[in-house]
Structure formats: structure tokens, C-alpha cells
Length: 160
Image 1 (tube, rainbow, N blue to C red):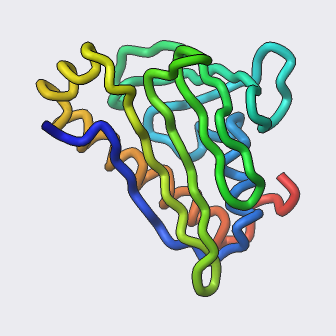
Image 2: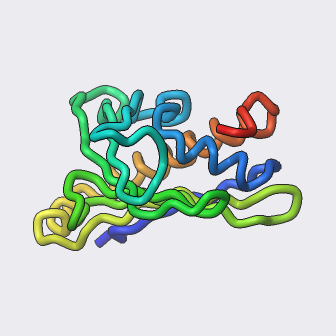
């Protein structure tokens, strides 16, 4: 059975704080992700903080279906980590995470997802995980490459 956790890492020649400013600003996700084309902070949240909530507008596989998903920030350490869980605040079905590790002339940035080991998700992943995993890895690679292009071009705002 494919792993319920997968990750992609890309090196970026930029300061970790600058990279973090982009990955933690969910309102900019549409510039990077091939599936999530917009996101908005909700319930009074206006930026990244543990417990802050947002909704992401997703076009699955880039073709549909199109739907909104509720998300809650679970980790938020400027310059290092940004993570959020989807659907449920207490027991997220999926946790997406960005980890930024200083390396050489910038940082290695890892985007990952970790599906909850529920029976339904285990069955889904056993049947279709090979396909969905491939789509997710390609999407994470695309997202990170687009962020890399922006932070390395110097067009990203340095203060978020």
C-alpha cells in the first residue's frame, strides 16, 4: 500500500524568513498551487498563527470537482514551519506541512502531506493511492518550483 505520507524537497537560494512569508500567506496560494486556486482567512483570522482558520478553494486534479475545504493552522514558526490540517480542527483528515531548513545559500523547503490513518482513508489510499500520490507529488513539486522562482527572482515582498 502506498504511504499515507509523502514529501517533496526543493532547494531555494533565498533567506528562510522570506520563503516562510510566502508559504504562510495562504491568500497567495493561487499563484503557486496547481489545485488550490484561492484561500481566505475566516473566523476573524487575518494571518498565520496556530489555531487560525482559513478556507481553500480547490479544483481537484486541476479539472474538478471544485470545492471549498476548511483548514486550521497547526504549526506556525516563522522562518521554519507552517502546517495546517483539513476538515476537522481536532482530528484533521490531512495535514499539509512546509518545513524550511537553512542550507548553503538559502534553504531546503519540504512540502508534505500526512493522511489520517482512518479506515476510509486507508481503503481509499490502498485502491487509488498510487494515482493520487503521483498527482500530489507533482503538485507539490510545481508549488515549490513556483515559490522558488518568485523568491529567487527577488519579486517576493521581504516582509510578507
